[in-house]
Length: 582
Image (cartoon, rainbow, N blue to C red; front, side, top):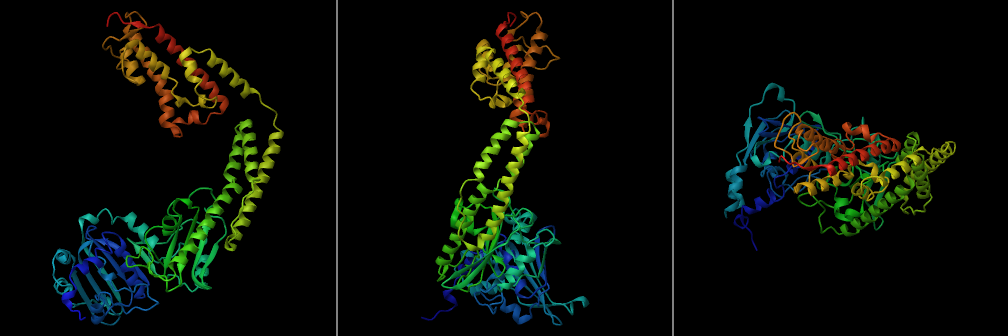
């Protein structure tokens, strides 16, 4: 069967523009890849015209008139295996985001040329039945020669201007997201000043035939580097791994493992697939698509693809599903991720450094019983048997973890000896006994409420000890409110302590001294606000440190007085009567 232009409608163009690059930052990746393939040494990305235009400028070899025309070919490419791009559609990736694409380019010592693509006009044709050739001919201008100035004669460059970004793109094309996207996705270097593993990783990749990018890429004048940005958060061992299928190496990976027993924070977490330095997708495909929630991200790493049989799909957000080895490859990756998760479990049991440091603080604060209890718990945890995965690439990490575990045990033994030299202090025990005695002598409703909580719980003001006051006020007034503020205000007739307001529901002065009733009402709320409200809403903040920093002994002293004050207020409310002047 013979095909003609009539067989290819304009909707094909919609599929390869809006379909692949639908209103997102991926077009920046496509243009950066083209710049890399033009052997650029410097790429600059920046806004112009009040952030209405975004420009991608490089100092690559540029294009002559014929090359510029050929760059518009769809699904055809003269690129080689050394190049990043290969599908021949990237130059159209800006269509969904702007009103016009303007390409200006020049080869060294040659003429400068310019070409315009009317994105608005192209998008309007998507709902018609016109042929792709007809529409492209109408929306694409001719290649025209542009006058160059004296400074441009001996240089080469290509400038892509995405002119008049659509209003819907303003939120997407913001500085923070652009920088994050570029650092994650395009082939940029590590920052060797902040990332101590950079040279070792680069050497490993180069040894495996993966050429590292030496291009300077800047966004709004700021250098773009790829994560991780901080090497100090990882153990000082670089894990390297070869992934093979049928005896053939198809990918290599490097990985770093966190010193802390918790999921890493962005941008220093995740494991990413890389093909020729470019990331598949914007996020970590491994954790999301393979093991899901069963893998906890205590590692950062990259898996660099070597095999030609593992190719990225057109949107570059995953592998082509029809690859002959994709199933076996993903099984290898999944097995390795399972091993990393086993490492995490091993580390959780064998490395307890922060908790050992906490024991030291408990001893300094004089909480000897808690310190002894924590030492016994941690030693039992460290002595627990845990199997380490058999993967030989992880063996160096096991040595690090075991060494840290041995140090933890030695530190605990030292702290235990320190405790043995400390004479028992019965003051805390005596304080607790006094507290229990006080609880037993409170008014019945307050005593019953307090006994709902453990001895430790009674030291937390936010347990809402004022709840019995609420119940009593509702009972005596018939009010429906549940907040101490409103109940005390209405019950004792205060709006502010300097004014006389509507007579109160209750009185402790037979209604003869309304100001005194008001001041008592204010005291009811003030006690609740100062202790209960503050603890609920300000715990851990600077303004509540006066309580947070107290030792257990100090907290018992304070809470005994608080319970006593609440009990006093309860008894006064209990003695109050309906206001005869209401």
